[in-house]
Length: 66
Image (cartoon, rainbow, N blue to C red; front, side, top):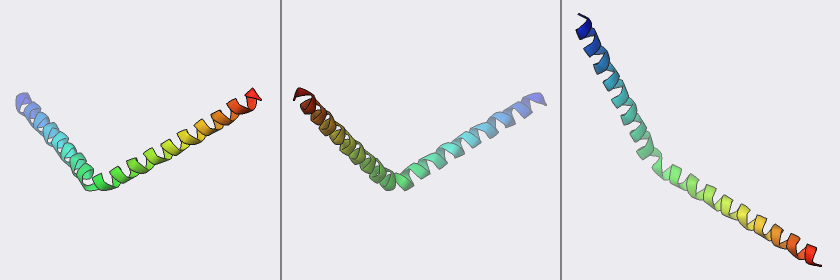
C-alpha cells in the first residue's frame, strides 16, 4: 500500500512540474516580442546614462585643469 501511495505522489509531482514548465514556456513564447522591446528600451536608457556620465566626467576633468 505504501509503495502505491509513493508512486502516485511521484507521478503527481512529475505532472505538476511538467505543467509548470509548459506554462513558463508558453508565457515566454507569448510575450517574447514585448520582452525584447522592453530589453532594447532598457539598453538604450543605460547607454544614454553612460554617455551623460562620461560627458559629466569630461567636464569635471576640464574644470580641474584650469
